[in-house]
Image 1 (cartoon, rainbow, N blue to C red):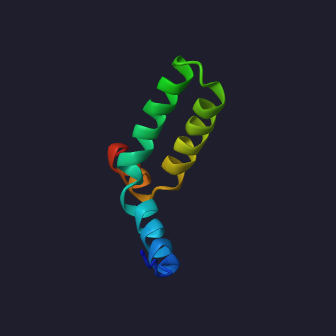
Image 2 (image 1 turned 45 degrees about the vertical axis):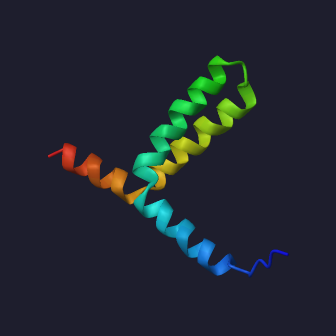
Image 3 (image 1 turned 180 degrees about the vertical axis):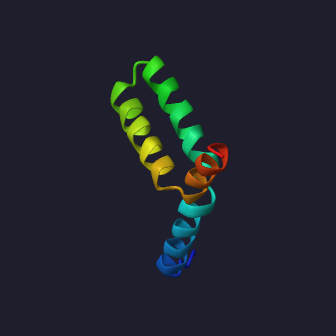
Length: 72
């Protein structure tokens, strides 16, 4: 028998940390995999992935920091 405890608060905190810390890594990967999905005729999933990848990059503070640093 497996007992699962409610860990929704931990997952919520980790997801917020993930948005700020790992979006710079996973958002471009999402864009690449979305392009592959479109290439393999999974148009709906590909467009959704492209949309979410762009949103993830735009919401990432690390991305904007990199853009600001590159603009100097």
